[in-house]
Length: 331
Image 1 (cartoon, rainbow, N blue to C red):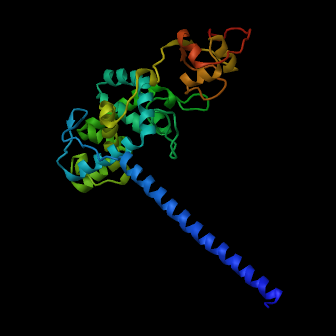
Image 2: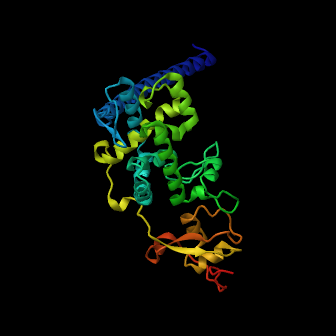
């Protein structure tokens, strides 16, 4: 006769063994199922997902100048920027959308100054056509420094910063590029100097004994600079070849504006905006160079852009109703 305690222990060990075996079987079965699921998932991934290398153009021009695509490093640098912009799809699509709104303002100013149309892509890579401020303090679509702006006749103060005025900043950029082209002889070197400065570029040209951008050994940023312009130009001009599909209605539409001359002080731009039929947000969107909520009497009349009435419904939700004296007339 087996003692009760001994029998109990044996039964306990038996059930523990069964549980352990069941656990091992479960883990093995689960592991097998998970592995099969992973294999199936991987097969679907390999079947459905594709990342393609890109066809790099064999010939290309910038501002009418032939790009030496026969040079190995030129082809590889362009390939890099094409890949970056093609597979950073969200950013590239935003560039298409913004270009549709702002290029119509930039293009005629370039044309008037006899600056090649390709330079609109310089503004695109500089800022993404947004009024950003760089860590160095450059601002606006064309990323102009305060000193450069003031030397070029733009006002930069607490109330007005004309680096954010697209027409005036584009004009200043044209003047710089024309001077650089005269100095260096090619548009590609003019573009490079926009990034590193005329003095810095001249130093490298003299030091290395060359006269061509594509023969220069430069730092990472300027070495990529012209190729970034080339890449966005090529992609924007051949959108469907790079997989970008959009309708005109998907793009940000150009918005016609009327000009309002302001030659007096304004104590509250939100109230002044309401008199023009817009709100403060819309006023600042189209006139980002107005840097404060007020302005003292300007030394010369200011031209402020107000959207045409037909666009107002798509731009704003509410205009605060006010009853004040119009401040647009001269004091």
